[in-house]
Length: 324
Image 1 (tube, rainbow, N blue to C red):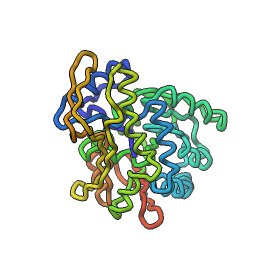
Image 2: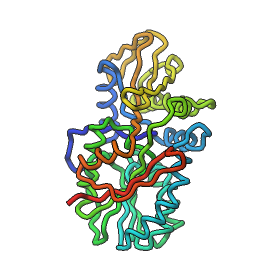
Image 3: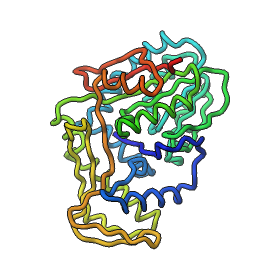
């Protein structure tokens, strides 16, 4: 499902800007635009992170279960291929569950640097993981992983980890920019393990983003709660509805919040008007065939070394290597 979008034009090394200032600027820009939009990276406050953990347990949400079943095989194969010492960098780290098969299989992992914009949640999950793997040095890095991030120096090779099909939250051009920035973060000789959702039946896709329990709805609406809480806004959240659908032409799920009434709000002194029926685009989730993703990776300076497909091609995982 989600994380993502950042300013793809920026290539500056990131240390995080004041969160509320950037959040405010991005919200004002997105809600003043036509059509309106919000970056899905702002789903992930503490509440949003918990909602997403709930989504991953839903019957309808296939990507989590398909990927989780695939990862032990991927980890075993990668352990046979990569036998040097490694420093692992997880982009957009969440619950930190998916990295554990690699900790168990790869004996050369010396350090671990999870990167995420939700700092409190990240530090809490990293602390729990450290207790399970005390022999691996761990340091949580609160930053926007979509931009190049300055990492601690290490002699070990770097192995990136980007699970969960989060790459799909970018447009193809933004995905290319992310992969280029990840290559810059990881450096020469690096590898990257990345999860990518596959194209499949629109009915399966629709049900995955419109679950019967309404958890995805609450996850989507939570970004408005965050705006109200952190930016002292007065959005009437009950006047917005969750709306998600598959766009077969673009090959992606689109997720929106639809205003059910005409309303006018103020955010930091800026007036924002919503017309009845107007939407806020909160997320896209692009799906790729193996050939499509291989071409995307190559365009960003990576080579595909291995490909793994889950049962019924429900999900895919790739091992990439920086092209010389």
